[in-house]
Length: 194
Image 1 (cartoon, rainbow, N blue to C red):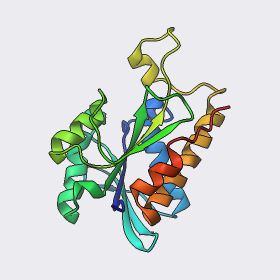
Image 2 (image 1 turned 180 degrees about the horizontal axis):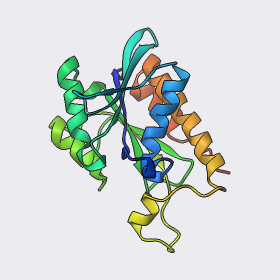
Image 3 (image 1 turned 135 degrees about the horizontal axis):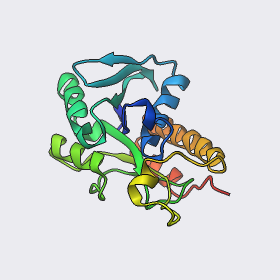
């Protein structure tokens, strides 16, 4: 399956910019820049939306404005409007269980405790859609989980974050040409952390 809609998960307010939980937004922002795709605030889709011709097909980008816990509402609106199969929706989001610098692409799976994914699974009525998880690492013990996830990356982490974004956009571009399964075999073992 080739993705037709790429969704980055995050929270919409400026105070969440560049936080660990918004790394999904950062990936689709990087794609929009690379593909010269403009964002616009789409009321029907409850999010920032863009589309363009990528890898010879129309591909849509979405950043829901519904906050993480209700991301599924926005995704469902796009899926219904374009009559997309859930399997053609690639969701990009943060994962504390992966170290910073790692990514993991899967064709299906559970929410794994991620509230944004719980919302998507509920609204799409299935967990059979691809997802790209970017590692944000666990807290070092000085902060609770919520403070860690909603916190910004440290200056020493930023170079790894930039490399992670590059790797994620490369993986997504590859999936548009070759599909999710082949992309998984090439990218899931790569690590950009030193």
